[in-house]
Length: 379
Image (cartoon, rainbow, N blue to C red):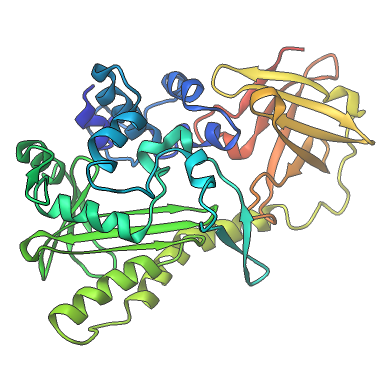
């Protein structure tokens, strides 16, 4: 496996590989070695699945020959030479800025600053903080093939491979442009010419997009602090229409919003319906002591189920840092709400009962996409 395989997302890792561990509070040193427990979602180099921790592994590997961390290499080779004083791959640096964005999610129809997130584990893929002024300098570097203020900071032959189209991703759902993926960049063939771009989204409240048109030395970056919507892509596409046509061809924001709604809305509503109404006559649970205990597997580590004030609490992550109450639903099935940005999104926690009438294992639904949500009792 090469760095290209990881930056082109053709390693076989699933799209969300390691994301659940980060959400539970594990750091990069704990997450990367556990990725090998996951089942490949395709044969090696046969399929594309965007993986934040796959790319992070590639970035760590790229920096390793220097004997320095990826973060230190970024500072030395990129941020400092470009004068990007407000840019850092370290969350602690972000917190030193008094004027900083808070991440917003929609709660009961209102945008609410709710989530505090430390993205350090996957900083190479989605954890660098910056601002428009700094990113303008970075765009100048990329558009000039590694040259900045007359100096060749990065060799041109090192820049060019990033944008080589290596994997056919089909067509853009709104513009119809044909899309390929290279090494960390989309390469789109639009009606205005070749576009180098990338977008980012976190349900905790962050959306970004950058689109560069190298033939015109033109680019735009859009940063938002909100739950995923189509606004960044809509603004970027509108920008190019205004530049070249002087008017909009279509309502891009509306169409991109519909695209993102289709990604999140149906899945959320379907999940809510499953547990919206308890059975008319739910089977009673066993005594809570039958479920209490410690469960574990190699990927997730320990999951502790404890009794507290007449109910059960599930504790996950390092030293049980993530603690969530369990609500009885039917016999050995409980539900919980682990996602702060979607507080009414339920998931099941189901216990398998052994012959001794005690739980022998537990299945945690939202962590079980790859079968790693099944943990056996160890205590």
